[in-house]
Length: 112
Length: 116
Image (cartoon, rainbow over the protein chains, first blue to last red):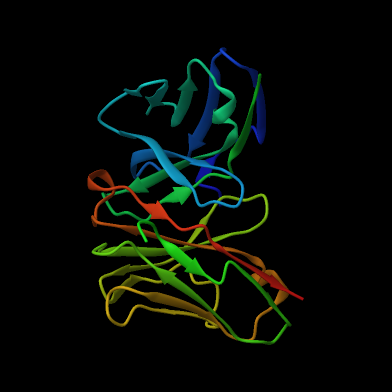
């Protein structure tokens, strides 16, 4: 049972344009959501997070949007840069416990 | 070092062999997690330690998997009688905090296990 779903395995975007990565979840108990970025042969690194009491969180070029009624979140990267090319994992946790459930990832390629 | 260190980076085992994977978390980090990442999948939770206490081992796939953190720092994940389905990258993560919204997880580079 995949509780966090990333239905797009890959995405290609031109440099300078917006990248939008989507994520859906099924567990209503999830109250904290995170995005991780992973380069080949490295571990995931934390990118940005959002609590369920908010619907938007922004950090520089990265913005995460949360739609609780739809159980959907998205990550926007504006403007996209070639260095953003990586696999992005959506993740979620419940009750403040750090056990994080990950999606299957979306591979983003930013074309110069 | 400044980050989470895992060893070995690569391990090839014959089916039936026992393997041990080591994780050195960031000094002072209370929380330690092990995750398993199969090819093309996201990391899947295996087990969680808070200091030396193993508080959650619900993700361990079978009794062939065993993890310990005896002194609350270094952790070892042991897999007995390895099977081909155990082939994956094993990721270790640590955190200063015990709650998600008060501290991020820092991941190591992973140990890639291939069982022949």
